[in-house]
Structures are given as structure tokens and as C-alpha cells.
Image (cartoon, rainbow over all chains, first blue to last red; front, side, top):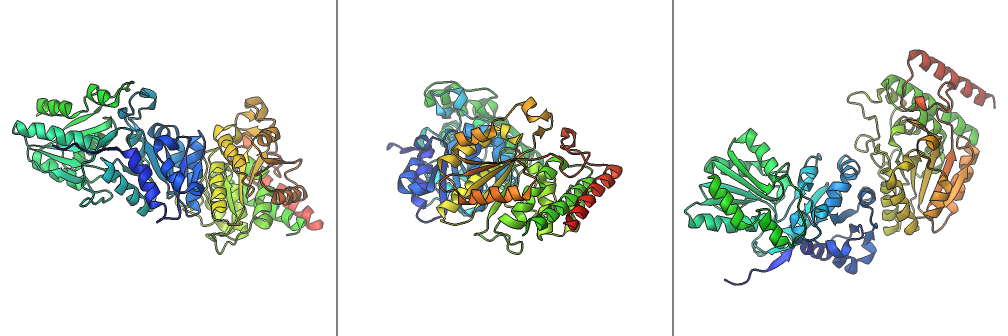
Amino acid sequence: MSEVKKIATRESYGNALAELGAQYPNLVVLDADLAGATKTSVFMKAFPERHIDCGIAEGNMMGVAAGLATAGKIPFASTFAMFAAGRAFEQVRNSIGYPHLNVKIGATHAGISVGEDGASHQCNEDIALMRTIPGMVVINPADDVEARAAVKAAIEHEGPVYMRFGRLAVPVINDPASYTFELGKGIVMQEGKDVTIVATGLEVSESLEAAKMLEADGILAEVINIHTIKPLDTDLIAASAKKTGKVVTVEEHSIIGGLGGAVAEALAEKAPTKMLRIGVNDTFGESGPAKALIEKYELDAKSIYNKVKAWL
Amino acid sequence: MQTLELQKMANEVRKGIVTAVHSAKAGHPGGSLSAADIFTYLYFEELNIDPKNPKDPDRDRFVLSKGHTAPGYYSAMAHRGYFPVEDLVTLRHVGSHLQGHPCMQHIPGIDMSSGSLGQGISVAVGMAIAGKLDKKSYHVYTLLGDGEIQEGQVWEAAMLAGHRHLDNLTVIVDNNGLQIDGKIDDVCSPYPIDKKFEAFNFHVISVADGNDMEQLRAAFTEAKSVKDKPVAIIAKTIKGKGVSFMENQASWHGTAPNDEQYQVAMADLEKVGEALCQK
């Protein structure tokens, strides 16, 4: 098997902004002293006059983005997920969400795959926080192809969007020639009949690997990629749940309030189904190489396989 | 507008504030009244705006960073023609477009929703940056409370405004000296306010009496002439100005007058109005 190409979705974010900058003259990018890390430095080099570094002041950056949006700009406010969704939650809620302004939030370094920086910088709560804001779209792309498509979709969407990107290089699992991104629509990556695995972000590729292992044991898993957590594709998930009767959610985020929470809420009302939530299990992360942490916190393909196998 | 006309209008704006807050049985009269002259000067003299074309991309912008003084803002806007003055009695009622704090989706002419202190100035900075990017000549104004500047975000925004030389931005601080828990210098002193803004690379204009139209006129005229720096106007005002029993009382920060107090307040303002008519 040939080596799978790996790209961090934060790279995809920066590259997409730089590519789309010429097409969208109202696109502006804001940073809080992390342009090198959020990869928006690529945009900054191409369009220096449309890049606004706000310094280390994320709350202010969200307000400045809101002000730019009132004047017809399409601002992308970029920082780590911890500071975008965590520190600046109330600015995002009151200055962007409440007036429903056309601000896009590019939140990089989400989840424990931040790695060595440790728990202070590993945001496992951002999806939960952002999806409670009325009118906020929440996107968590699985790979480079999806991430770049998501940036374009966010520009085309009128209203606030929270996008979650990672630091770790992850396998490119989608074919750019055939891939289409539809906001709010999940993608059936693989059909199955015994169990539904609903995954998001980098856990989509891990779940596909886990599904292969299950298949070797004669268990056919349906794998659904939920790149848009809000609005959630409840019809797709409920239909699959009715078919298989068992749903597993997999995310690099707390099992509280994220994809698992959203799916549980939806299924409880539309199609009550036995569920297993796999994610960061109500705990803080720690320092270490990203891969090692994903294994330690049982978010790798083998761990997913073991958990699903034991649960079925 | 002539100064006397502005003074008369400010008195009408004050009547609207008292009427609205009385009708709502809640709201913030103290800081609305202290800033009534600033609201009036902005909406009847300073701002390049047209109530009939509230989305004009070239209009001046105003952000009420101290959003709780919405009654003053609404009263000035109503008198300026954005919506009927009669609507003021619907303040804070279910279904009214006059929300407790300003909401841009409910009222054309409100450039930004506000209410959570410290956030409006950041939005004003964003508007000013947009004006520079688009090479527009509009000016952005934002009004802050003196208690509000205890919020750290205010200084994040001020730092960026000074750093980017936003001479299309004027920050006004309504320095009425009182906040909910008492005197600002007893609670957590923000003084010296002028030195702080100077240190953040603002051109600072101190107004000894921010309830005096002539002094406001001089300050805003000077502000317009400043190049290469944002401007901070620190206006010393009287909280509750114009209503005898509310003046300089922190307790009237967020309390509505009862029916009897309403009558007294309106009588106070009627007297002011009559005196202005004698001039």
C-alpha cells in the first residue's frame, strides 16, 4: 500500500485563505500573535494589507472582527481553539452570535493532538461551547480536502461559523476530484449493517481503520463523517441508527456536549438507540507526542476497535 | 444646530429617558441622563447620518459601548427620527423593538448590539479599521462608562487603536464618577483616565463639564482636527443630571422611578425647559 499523504488541517486553513483571497476581496484575516501557528501567515504574505494582527488579545480580536463584519468584510478570526472558544466565549456569544454577524472563527490546535504543550492548550470543550450559541455553525473537518472545502463553504455562508482545525498532520482520506462539501450534510464513508460509527475530525480516518478491523471479525460497520456538528444531519444519523440499532460516536473532544452529546440528543428524540460515546472521557490531557496521546486516551483505531468489539 | 436648540433637545431627550424607564419599571436612568447631552450633540450635530438611509455605507458610526444606557440612546434616536417618540414607552416590554440593551437586528440605525461592558469599543475599532481599508471618510464614535473602563478588554482595544493610528475613531468616556457599588474611585479607581489613554497613544481631550453643549462642541471640533491618532474625550458629567433627586446618586444607576417620583422628575425637566424658552 502506498504511503498516505498527511497534512494538518491548520495548513489547509492557511492555504485555503491564501487561495481564496484574490477571489474574495472582502476577506480579511485576524490573528492574535499566532499567525505562524494558525498558518494564516501564508495569507499574510499574499495580502499583507488585509491581515490584522491584534496582538495577544483574543477577546478584543473577536470584537474587532465583529466591527469589520458590520462594514461588509468577511473576517476570519484565527487563534487556538482554547482561546477562541474558551477565553473569548462571551465576546463570540455577545459581539458575534447575538447580532448574527458574518464572522468566521478559525480555531486551530483543537483537542489533545496539540501534543507537547499539554492540557492548558488542549481544548476538548470547544464544540460543546460553540454549539450552544444560537445561529452558530460548527464545522470540524476530517482532512485537508474537507478543510479547504469547508473554508470556502464558510465564506459562502452568511452568518457566524466556528471551524475547528488540528495541529497534527492527518491522512488525506478524501479524493479532491470527487469530494463535495455540503454544509450540514454528513457523509457515509462506508456502508454497513451491524453498527453505526459516527465520527468527526481526525477520528474519521481512525474510525475507518477500526471498521476494517471489525470487518475482519465479520462485523460490518457503517461509518458516517459528520463534518458539520451544527446544524447536525439528524436525518442521516437517525436513518442509520434505525438500520443498525447501535450507534458509536468518536471524537477528539470531551464526550460531554460535543458530537456524542449532539448525536445523543438527536437520537433520544428521533430514534432512541443504544449508544457508546468515545472521546476524551471527562478528563484533562497532558504533554506528549500527539500520536502517543491519541493512543493513551484510547482514540486510535485499535482502541476504537477494542471498545466497539467489547460493547457489541 | 444652535447651542440653545441643542440644550432644548437634550431636555426633551431627558424627558424621553424618564418616561421610558418609568414605563419599563426597570432600566438605567442615571447614566442615560449623565450622557443625554453627549447623545444629543452626537445625533443632532456631530454624526453624518440620515435616519431615512440608516445603512448608508458612508455614514458615521456610533457604538454605545455602555449599552445599559439604551434609554438615552433610544430617546435621542427617536427624537432624531429613527422611530416614533411614542415607542419609548414600550422599552423593555415583551415584543418591543426597544430591548433592555441595544439590538441592531431590532432597530435600523443601531450600528452594533451592545450591553456586555468592554465589548463595544473593540467593535468600534473594527469599524474604524474597515474604514481605513476601504479608504472611506466616515468617522466612528463610541461611548463608554467610566466604570466600564475597568474591563480589561477596553485597554486591549485602546492598544490596537493607538497602534494602528486610527484617527477616524473617537472614544468618549462618560465620567460621571459613579458605578453600581458606589464611587468609581472607592470601588476600583480607573484614575487617571486621561494619562491612561495618553499612554495608549491617544490624543486626549478633557471636558470639565460634559453636560455643557459649548464645551462638548469645542471638544468634538478639536477631535475632528486630530491626525494620526485616535481621540479620547473624557467628559466629566453628573449622573442623573436634570432630575433633582437622581443627581449624583449611585442608587439611581439601575432603578426606575415610581409614579410619584416620575411626576417630580418630569416637573423638574419641565422647569428646565421653561427656563430655556425664556432665553
